[in-house]
Amino acid sequence: MSANIRPSGVFNTTYAQDMLLDRTWSNRLSAWGFVAVLLILPMLSSDGLLGLTIIPSLWISVIAKIAIFAIAVQGLNIIMGYTGQISLGHAAFMAVGAYTAAILVRELGFTFWTAP
Image: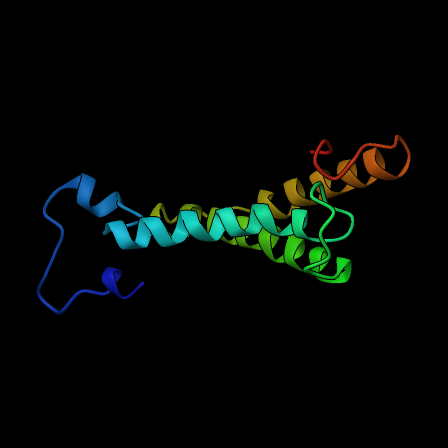
């Protein structure tokens, strides 16, 4: 994260440099590693695919909510931070997606992995 903060007077000279989200390989590797950990964590609960009880099932829902909000915040960061556009649709799209996933899981018997 500190690689994105540069000293005063150091500027981007091309559009490609200006649009980079991850400026170094360590930033890119840590971001993808975090995503991989978030995807593996639900499998380590008693309800997961592996059947291990390393993480309690209660924490899995908390971790899933954190991941969902992190995705929404990154979307807002790209839209409002890099382009300067104001977007009111993010909350509506998240609400429609959450409602659809809840209906699919509760009423139609889909699993967590197959619901959108």
